[in-house]
Image 1 (cartoon, chains in turn blue, brown):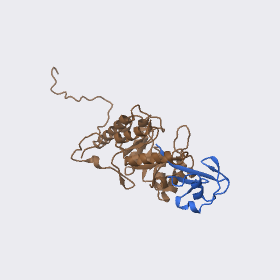
Image 2 (cartoon, chains in turn blue, red):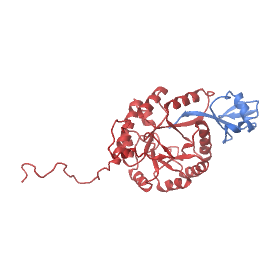
Image 3 (cartoon, rainbow over the protein chains, first blue to last red):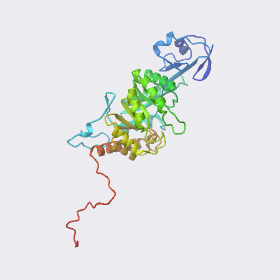
Image 4 (cartoon, helix red, strand yellow):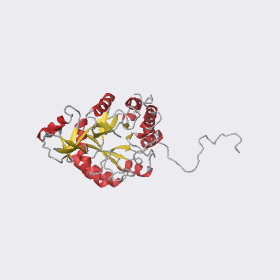
Length: 65
Length: 275
């Protein structure tokens, strides 16, 4: 299915957020996530279903002022 | 006790030791420093060591390289040994800011959040209505909110009512380096809320701006661009550290009142040739 990952269209086969992150290469990376603009805690990723067209945000620590 | 940046020894009264707490945390210095726009990670680290800053502001941004860059940056910050203050920079809506705050809390494992809800793209001034709403949501959810605000007294009052225990009024718009644009307003804000921890955040360009903020009685300053965009960021960081301490010491020393008319400092009595 096609979803938006950080505003880019990605084709993924998994339907659970934790599996999608592994599929995209973020399995052991320090990240935080939001789905359709709502925060999804790390503990909740295994219970979060993703459907076609969903908007997934994946963020990491960065410089800031 | 010796002041870390300047090497100055305290007077016996030791008033400089009275560091105000930020949500129960006593900081080791009155300078908070941003981590953006440095020429290199090595220069960022050097600037932090020279600044003696106690807090580093950071952000969360979209991951493009599957973790490498973010992890490298996090390792760099962790090595500095300072308190981390994540921000919601660039957020223009309450929902965006709240979601970003939650992501930051999980990433950085801290309840501290520098809350920015931007209301105008040109001036980057806060949206006061969204700021209060987001602050209330986050305070209720256990965050310790550092709101980026203006010198507006009513807005400050609303933020305190929302649960904020720290206020961070701007000196001038972010990145301008203009210094303290509204001295009267900042002095008034300080006077109206003498027991609230307050940090001048944004708009500082020179160490003298930081010294002036501290002379007004503010508890700390937060800056980024003035150091990171200086020709020599590490030396400018040191200059700000000295200025912050100088301004604080001056405030504690109870400055003389200004006056319009001249008054000779050398005694007139006893002057030769005086008829």
